[in-house]
Amino acid sequence: IFKMVKREYAPAQEALLAALETASMKPFAGQISEMGKMVKAVSSVPEKISTVLNGMIGQTITLQVDGRPLEIRLQAITEELVRGRVARETGEQTVNFRVSNIPVEDQLKILGKPATTEQRLVTCILLIRAGRYAEASAYAADCGALSDTLQELLATLAPPS
Image (cartoon, rainbow, N blue to C red; front, side, top):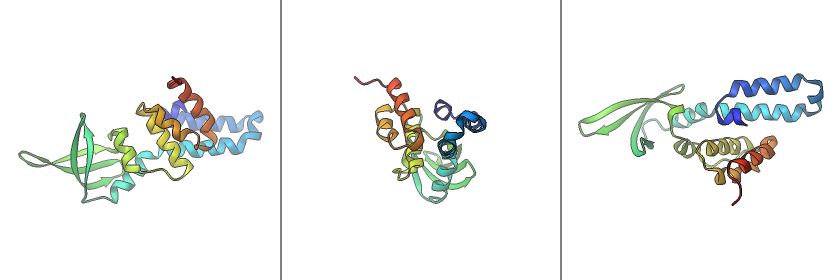
């Protein structure tokens, strides 16, 4: 879980693969495999956001930049690079940024309400990254094989008052 929160996906996948190769873990192969799918779901957040934004080409979205809202008219999405236009006093200006640089709050808005276990996990991890532990707790119980671990983590991050 910590590796996913820190965006260290390869080490998380490697740990799961190593666990699958351990004889004592064979009875848990199904759960470990499910965890691997969850890690993959979280690691593909930039791709998912790119896909959503690609469907919004020509539309204007509002993102938080330096603590202020900035309206950006989307022009193109290439893999993880976003190109858009912003209105300035001197006219429109082209801006380029990486999907991974979009603030967590805006990533959550772009992804929308989660409907599947994997989407709830992604939302939970993004909320943890944003420090919104109480909201993350609401999703943690519905994150499949990682639910218990997420709930334990959240209990240490935001102990009950």
